[in-house]
Image (cartoon, rainbow over all chains, first blue to last red; front, side, top):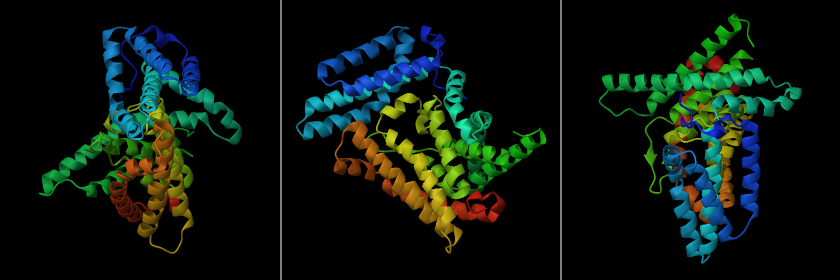
Length: 198
Length: 181
């Protein structure tokens, strides 16, 4: 499965994931603490400059991911214009774009394996309460492996429906779909137990 | 233990796979998907703890940058958008759905699943979503409710599906209905 990490190798790919996430947290806190349109225009421009630094392809991918924000931007600005607080609306929209942009930047420059390491580190204190980080990591791997498998089974179910019925594929395939997922889970559990278990 | 881990993981994958089913897109670009149906099923089939964990795993993987949300969306940025409240609501909603499913006695499985999915999968998820819209987009309560209400009819349809599917699983794989085990 493809993750949202950018294939364009940047210098930030090598930085420790924990540090990037900590900086992101700090930056987001600053974004929400600072008031003033000029500031937020500056922050937004700075964020865009970070995207532009690794080159055109990286910038284009980043902007495409940011473009999914337009419904929220329209909603926020329209609502604030209607209530006579246009400046505040623009500021909130800019703040959201910058916050999402910075967060996407961390996502784009951090490999999934590094994220899993951070997750393990974050979960370690919970082992006191009996949590097994090994189980969580296995679950992560299983989801990544089985999402495409289930998607494929869903596609096969749709095809077999089309081959036999004149009606459109409806919600009726959801039950066999769920039963297939349950059967897979039981088989994998059995296989794990047979190999020594968790 | 192995069974819990694999069922949680497979239901998380199920939520993700349901996001791949062709979707309607609303006027202002917000997709309606079968994904929230997956959240309801997590609660009605797996119960409160495992269902909540499956939803938590889903949200965690989205945060870690997997494009599991409908339309291939994902990454940390999602948590700074108006969708943030709904993602938190997914986890709480699956948990509450499972809790109702475990605690409510006397009705048939399908009816119980319907009630559980309404309380957890609709009421809790939308309450969290409305709070999220108010906090992130700075909307007023009424405006947030108006924006949110667009999703409600679709979710009632999904609730009915969740009830039927849960009743079907109770017949087809009774041992796997952990919420009633």
